[in-house]
Length: 68
Image (cartoon, rainbow, N blue to C red; front, side, top):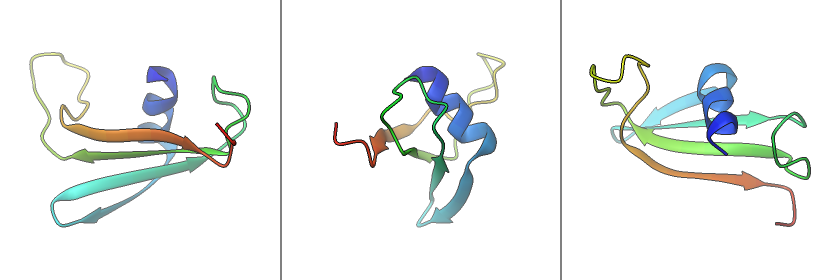
């Protein structure tokens, strides 16, 4: 799922609400081939130590439209 979260953060449609951001990406190229999409919600805080510039406060991430 980590690769799918990265892909969603890179290419997804993101919107901010109440200090949290949610990114959504519909695709059939995920590791879960039955998924219609992935949604990732996170806080904006980025830790400079890992050098990957990713948010450290991922709240939830899930596949949808897959019956899983």
